Length: 275
Image (cartoon, rainbow, N blue to C red; front, side, top):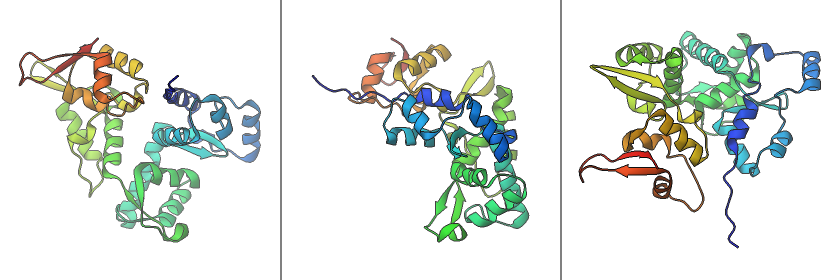
């Protein structure tokens, strides 16, 4: 009998961690933490996740990274989006005030300043981990430097602008560009898999539709996609399925299994609909 690897149920991981996102009011003293621990609603330690999620340790760690989860006081948490926006905005504000280069942020300076502003040290470091990457090895926190990732920062602010719903593309671009930090360049190509563009008459509208919000199992993913649009051109569909991984099945195999391809002429753009 052939053994078939089972795709890890990481959608369940997201559901568990979203039960209790980390918010500013969660910054508590020891006594408050002890009270919370008695209840433990929506709080999960590593061993709790291992018990509940059908995945190897490596797959679970990868899932936590994908969700930008962070271990705080022994529990794995997803930080509330609005709170992450506040921390990132304060980091960028401090960079302007202190003349820091976004390509060479000294960890001790950045984290220390955010602590002075009232943010927990672990959350300040998490902000660097989510929106940046380390430069070189460094020698302890004093020697570590970080560079902010242009694409991640720009996508973050695109999501912030689109929180209120769909917008005319000209209005969106205007608002988005105002939020991009000096020294960074935003391009529409960055938003592949983050937004959908719709043409209504002579107007073009844009709205948030992030691949990160979609199910990780192919059947559920394609069901959501075809509820969203009955027909997809390949250039629009590809960003929403390229992360799907099923052992023994190629991307072409996935398309054959879940979609119907139509192509009026040999040189026409193929269109995919539900099978």
